[in-house]
Length: 147
Image 1: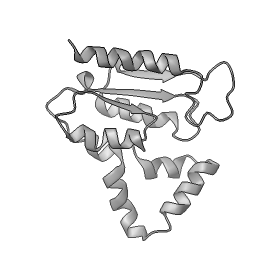
Image 2: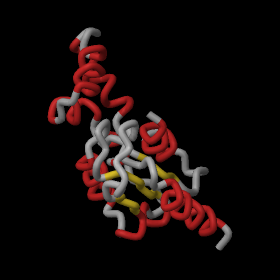
Image 3: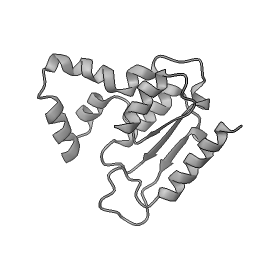
Image 4: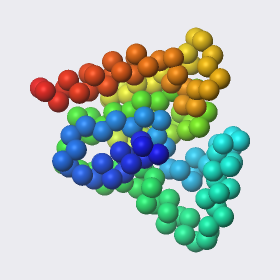
């Protein structure tokens, strides 16, 4: 849920100069409704055990979609970056595409990783084995703060 916090509360705080969402969702409930894996079915079952009327209100409090609609004075292309594995088995890749589109982010602001050549069975977000690539991307973002 770290990417969610970055793309919700962090997005509204203009003191935060750079935001990196790693494997984040755009609309949590919509993703759960569209993408059924064992993990998402389990999470969806647990969150829907609460009062159904409160579910949409909860979604509006935690899903990036509702925060990204409120544009701030800093252009998103100078502020928001995304990292997502195309083979993510928890947060489907389409979520990253929706976020990229909503913010009209240029390609240089996103790192969309292909499935690693070596199959890692414990790779929840499809990033295992690609740490060096992700770290280099993050270092470039940090270095841009100095300019």
